[in-house]
Image (tube, rainbow, N blue to C red; front, side):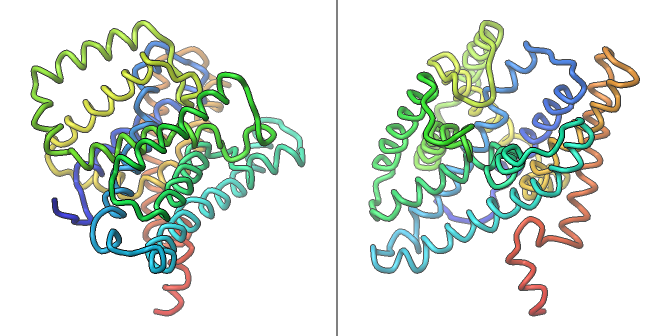
Length: 340
């Protein structure tokens, strides 16, 4: 299997999922929640990002040149690079945007300043729970990679074990840290979807050959039945066998659909810059939704308008950031720009 850096279907899958993330936030901001519709979205709109992260992470780490690094060279090369990406591409942007967002949102929502709330929302990772969970999941994965095992099943089994512990802690409401700082239980459970992404990378050709239309159709029917039968949440803390099946089937259906989509520059841009879209996917739609609800409450069509307007504003903002302030999404680019 080639290890080319750019994979078009991944960009398209990220773009589709991100569009639905913005839609769900527009619904929440406006306060017009359609639980049935959200039950179709929540099984996959976040979990597909965990899945794709596992696909890309293991694809890079378990192929050359990184796979040949031993326990002495890996910490200085592969591990250092992965840790750098976690810090500069996830932790620091999330912290920066949390700080930018905290005070304006507090004023708009009428929340007074509370030190504990400020700490949780900023350095506690409370504003962007997905990034917090993914950060922890990738740190766990980094620790596993220090063993230098080459068999993907070793990582899958350990990941399932960690996810099982996270599910037990969630079900029994066990807390190691107050308020669930850095969404650590979500991160433990996310390990399950990183592991699924790793398996898909390993057996991609075999899985794709199996997923013909006559297999995808029953999967879609099962997913629809489950979505109509259960109320799903996007945090995975209520993970059950039906919700797991719904998540897995919907992720595979989205991926297969995106593999059949033609190339599209619009979707490609969103997918390549999904971090920027996610960091703005809550604040802009929630703000628009709150303003719209104040003057025109209870109109379902406004959710669609808020979604389109919000997505257009986010797209424009990310365009400007990528063009003029790319260091907001990766502080390493700030030092590079000074060098040039």
